[in-house]
Figure 1 (cartoon, rainbow, N blue to C red):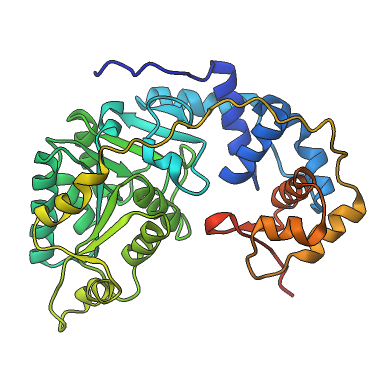
Figure 2: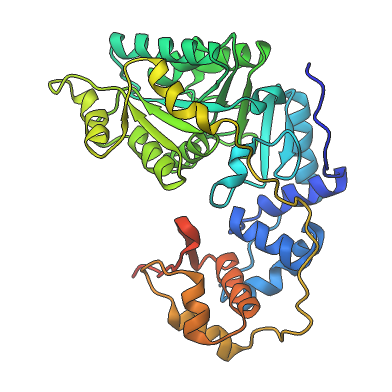
Length: 378
């Protein structure tokens, strides 16, 4: 076991409140951070949630997990040999802090030391060819020797091969469900081996959570966000790997692709990425040359437990203010700065209305901090 890094850590009481808050319906990473910044602590934010939801127009108050339920999940993590790491703590993966709306809490099983290595993501087709599997394993092995951690999503095919190729040098698996429910089930043994050999398994989902279709893009977002660059080995035209590549590009990560035969549909996605400007890869040195100049950069340290801003000079938003913000929103994403300019309201008032709408399930957040209004169907 590696020596824990020094730095600020959540108290047991804070960790419990953070877990209750992030497990509350309609509280996502963005609204979580807004709540902490506004009220100073998760404990106070939990008390304010019902009032905020009503102000946002919620038809019913979302259920807040009880203290007993949060304690039960913490105990499930302990039994599984896992822990919850907060965004401000030293064992939190550094690059994740730089992505849009990073998860405030991660369930982690394994060594935190692997997060100190610069990471490269390797993703690709589940129904990979033998050549693709060999290429993924070779890239992972060679990059591991060069000092990189390999991160992937523990799926069949390319993901599995990437993890296997980097077991001895450090690999990070990201799950779409709870840490206690590896998917696919046949990779449960691989998860155990990753942890035993100095790697780590992470998830933002609750223990006992069976992954659904919509959870895999969330998983892909973490794979892309935790890496300096992302390599696609094989991918069809419409695939989760291309979603990962798009997310990586939006986050400013480097995107690489392995070329393939135009006759193989599993190469259609990677060949398309190359046409769109991805860096061509035939060996690990292609990736190392592009990434090496960036690996000396450290992610900026975010203050983990900020003091709440002073809102005393700004009156809370009234009904007219809420109406002006809501009218300014539509199905097309817009920048928050534009809403502030358009409404003429104080930024603190606009942010509070957006937070209320978010907690009421009426706001959708997009890349770059843009927002749009959710319209009920029918």
